[in-house]
Length: 206
Image 1: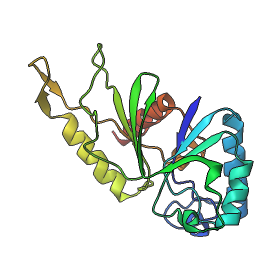
Image 2 (image 1 turned 30 degrees about the horizontal axis):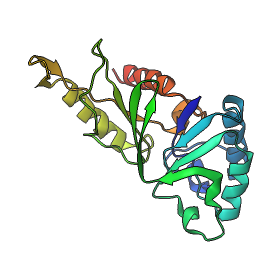
Image 3 (image 1 turned 120 degrees about the vertical axis):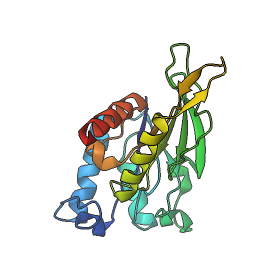
Image 4 (image 1 turned 90 degrees about the vertical axis):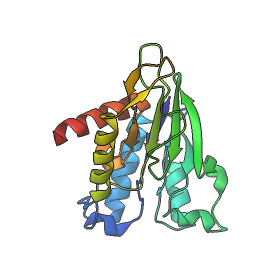
């Protein structure tokens, strides 16, 4: 099974009472909670793609956390993943580290970047039933005003039409999903689970 998650920010003390306001009493409590949530879902043979900003800790702190987390971990580099630049860090703890990736997930393409991409590769592709075949998964913006701006753009784009390959008019697909860890209670989720989380988030905005 493959899971996705973003912006865990292990060891990042300021997120307890700023930006996310996660509400833990200490960064140690936050770290332990996130590790427990992860390991209750992820098995040792599962894969987890982390969409950036995994840890604010140093090389040793981050390696200790990685060794405790179940599954094979893969990292899309985030702007706060400074531990990667520390020569003491062992990159083999990740299956790979990339700035950008495209993978297949149950006959669908996933475009992976720490930063949201509003026009992504394969965006217009649909299956035989008209369902989107490509999803853009990202992190970075947490639950901030930038997410509000992005939602407004997605709403605008969904009301536009383009000429399909068959010559008819159809709406523009815009399957951009923020895999922000707080929205899944710090649990890595499958693509289908993130699709449902995104639907629930948008319904709450109506």
